[in-house]
Image (tube, rainbow, N blue to C red):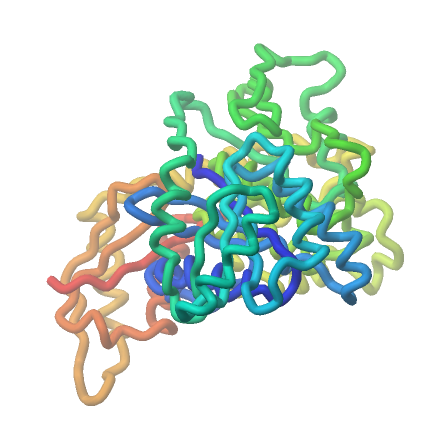
Amino acid sequence: MGAIVAIVGRPNVGKSTFFNRLIQRREAIVDAVSGVTRDRHYGKSDWNGKEFSLIDTGGYIVGSDDIFEKEIDKQVELAIDEADAIVFMVDVESGVTGMDEDVAKLLRRVDKPVFLAINKVDNAKRAADAVEFYALGLGEYFTLSSINGGGTGELLDALVKVLPEAEEEVDELPRFAVVGRPNAGKSSFINALIGEDRYIVTDIAGTTRDSIDTKYNRFGFEFNLIDTAGIRRKAKVKEDLEFYSVMRSVRAIEHSDVCILLFDATRGFDGQVSNIFWLAQRNNKGVVILVNKWDLVEDKETNTMKEYTIRIKQEIEPFVDVPIIFISVLNKQRIYKAIETAVDVYKNRSKKVKTSELNDVMLPIIDHTPPPAYKDKYVKIKYITQLPTLYPQFAFFCNLPQYVREPYKRFLENKLRENFDFTGVPVTIYMRKK
């Protein structure tokens, strides 16, 4: 379970540039796969071997500056509630502004580590100008230039020192997180599952301080259910704040094996649901999509399950091998099926394919459809093995790994899926030099 670091500050101080600089080293390694980051405001970073999730709060505010005045306090309070450490970014060019003072006032009351980062300091005169930020009452500060990266190292050194150590998961039981937008029916789904009879063995107060883990034993399955819906935070935080539900989802997703993504059929698979989906995918978690309130969808003649499923799959390409189940929490329809499917996905995620079997099945397929030649170079794949990780990753050993293009990797992934059933689970493929 990694730590969460939130970046706060008013618009245009350079939060996104700083954020991008921190995650790009990793994205270059990790996300070169799809070449796109689906969610520009959440990423993973690491420094000195310590990994953390980074959230750029500014990205969640849409609207003009005056709306921003009201929103920024909410953003900061959320960051205070949810993050393990906070980077407060200001900009030396504009000096201390009234809005900076507002934010500082909120941050001074916090007992979490706060790092004051003064951006756009790229020469000695500006370094001298930075002194006025002592007036914010947050003590020592870090000067940096997020455009060229100067000064970021010192800030990161100090930051990772205060981050909590990742907790080792001792529990062997599968962990299912129920995630989705507020009001999609997550709580009702969990209540319907647990039932009035309360088949609960124990209520463990969640190890993460904002989700309740329920040990669940029913229908012959035993697992932990991570419920982020169960805790109501301060009333003054509007429930529908996008940033809020993303923050909550990050914690639950990182902590789980399988994400049960539940959304309201009448509202559709919108941008925010898709954000949560990509969060799960990027964290290599299993995914089951539940379409709730299907009983309320109008004109089922034109809007059949089949057509609805096709539309969802268009949204989640290229990772379309995901179970989609139409449920009604209210009428307790297919709830058991949902859990059964989550258990299957969990098994798929931990599946290990024997090396001999892998080669027997895949090598003939590769012989039949070899990688296309690139610049007159022919790639020969000689051997395949599954890596010993928590989720399915495969190494294909070949003579020229650099010439294998994305479409061919996708072809290999699809063949693995056809032959070994990895439904609901992201699969990673590496080309390695023999």
